[in-house]
Length: 112
Image (cartoon, rainbow, N blue to C red; front, side, top):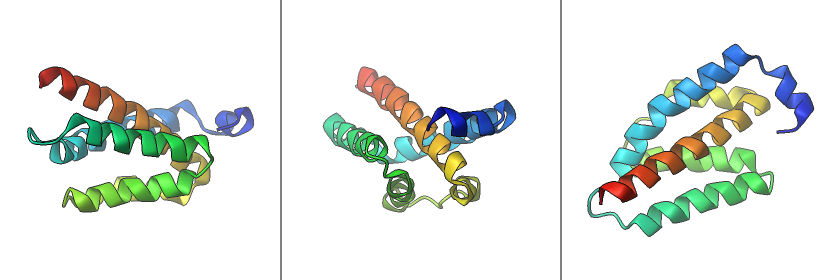
């Protein structure tokens, strides 16, 4: 996200996006990352999302997140879907999701 876009989003919106990401990422990762799951599979998903964002494919990363909910057989949260209505908020959500995703899989690796 460039500096100009960054300034357009208020701290309240940022905090809401961060809260939503945190609330919905953990249940998704819990469902995807079972005791039988290989940690490298989760790393692959993480790095694929990062690569999409790094190359500017934010919408595709957002769609990949939606696909992960389908794979996990979880209902796609309406609050997450709403993030797709604004490019700036979608980008912020994807970035927050990636940060949360990394933290959660890192913790899960330590548990195993």
